Length: 259
Ligand code: 6PG
Image (cartoon, rainbow, N blue to C red; front, side, top):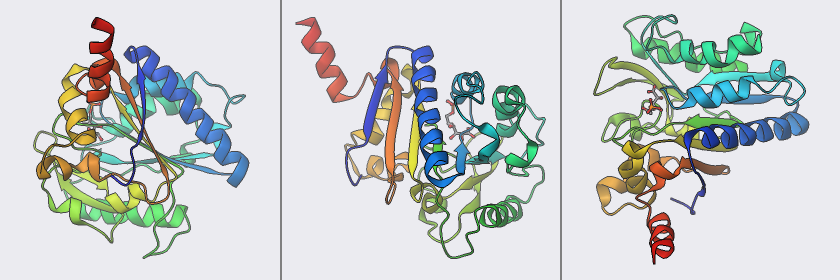
């Protein structure tokens, strides 16, 4: 990791969602003020639900959502109304409550069996929307990421060829669990961002958080989430205390308090 990322550790998942939402709104406000547009890449899975609900409560007075453009970090190859669809989760918790113009959302058209074709189509969409022809890398203003218990992020899984991709922005991927067929942004797409935020909650993630942030061997140093190192951007980890519990610095604080 080029330099130690910023850690923001909250007491519980509610505070985590609120604090992360405040930060996302701040990034959006700064970006719109400076660039007049804001490109946000959303994470999937379950953890971001509370964050998206908190963001949806922020009305146009806090952020002009209709000037934000939404992309996805990954998608399962399922229809948009499927229970496993990352688009469905974001639509239910964020887009619909915001009454967002559907044209502001670049959905990964995940339905279909050919993940590589879906990935190529989405890359073309991203390049067109960001006016960034190949081989340049678009600069997303904010990329939101989760962390799997195995150290994966987006749909970049440990010890897979996806981690070696240096040219394409979006590729097909195979997950170790259902739904296995995925489409994911690549490390160059993530590391070109202005700000990258990890949002991680719960004791089950504590070993993965420690492995990524305090690796002890080469395997851990090569975990997908550890390879997220923005080239010229900011990296911030939003954790609750349960997810941070195995970090040396946090354990030291707890030990000090118990003395
Ligand atoms: C996905 C996500 C994935 C997720 C982690 C954590 O499509 O599943 O992109 O990377 O962020 O698996 O998932 P939870 O938030 O559900 O624990």
